[in-house]
Amino acid sequence: MDSVAAMFGVSKHSVWRIASEKNSRLTSERQKARYTASCSKCGGPCVSAEHPSKRGVGRRTPVAICQSCEGKSRRIRFRYDELGQLAAVKCETCKAFKHPEEFCAGVKFKDIRPEGIHKSCRACLTKLRQDYRERHKIPCRSCGAPCLPASEKGPRGADSRLCRSCWLESRKKAAA
Image (cartoon, rainbow, N blue to C red; front, side, top):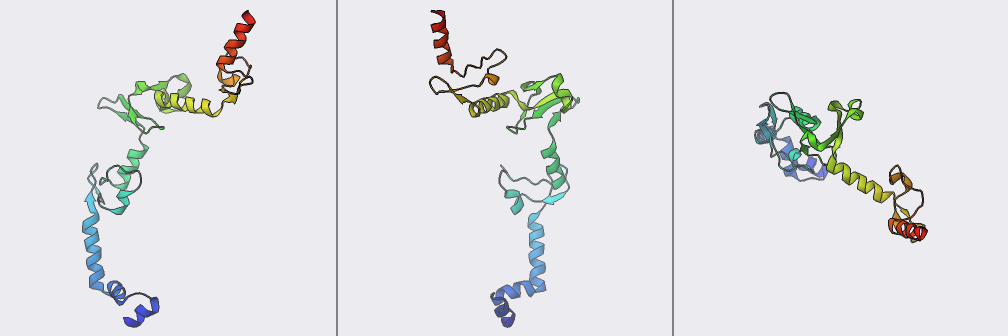
């Protein structure tokens, strides 16, 4: 064992740990016993909550769930109650399940999304629109303050490239 350890540059204890059949069998049995559990959803065999893979980034609390149940829970966007009625929808922006009335729905979404429901809730859509408008502001031609382009001012938006305060001043001057 000393010559093998010297050849690989490791301690002889490391070589003994790998080479010993009895030790490797006990280690694997201990690991199986420690990391084996039953799924909390379907009851099938799975990795326990103590397994290192269950402590990844983004996991709030480690739970013993088999791979198929975990995959299904990540894919599910709609939750139904016992009567088959739509009970909750998952917002793709904030990742929270919310009541279906908190989502925009209409004919224009029927063709592209199941249930005709938008992928983000109204609160997230408002925040996304605000962020978009902040990113696409242009400088005011008069004072240089950021203002919205004409395309973002609605159907009656004038292409004056003026901020609200400068536009109001120009209207006052025109009326006088």
